[in-house]
Image (cartoon, rainbow, N blue to C red):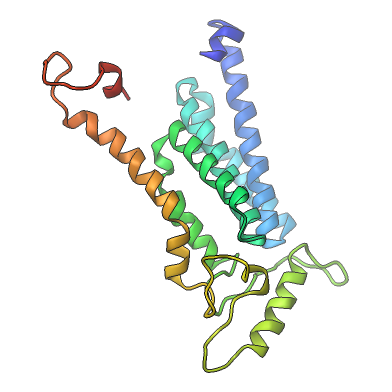
Length: 231
């Protein structure tokens, strides 16, 4: 509706907005990959393939698929906010930002319900939050450590000194998290950490499924406004 107020019925303006949103998504993807992996050129290659892939370009060319392009922006923003949260746990403000961005993405397109599972995969690699893992840093040059190099070295030193009967100890950077116990980030801890995200995903699907189970809007038995059943 905002596009119609700005551009009217001219298709050029609507396509321009899609292009800008898609460009922002590709840039965010590059920044997130660069932050997580430390690999500059490989991150740039993946972002470039994403930008020109026919499945992505189709959504840009199809004005009615604005929801797909816009949800992609919030998808990348959520991952970026999550990486920022992981590096400085436990921060309610940073985790709250992850939840808010995820909620906005779900409102754009419910397909983002899979995002919590994507975050679990990122916990395994390259974030290395699973007990016994490590921060994976690639693409480094001699004498020019990446932004995560110090985290990697500190983790290795800590892991070497903490091998005992008690099992693996948490990463020093993660020790402040409420969800990290003395035995490190187990799968249970990581799942518990993402309960708010799973709750939003379930609520999103429930809000889509419930109106379909209600009687017709013409029936007096329907207890909700008709607009609630429109998706």
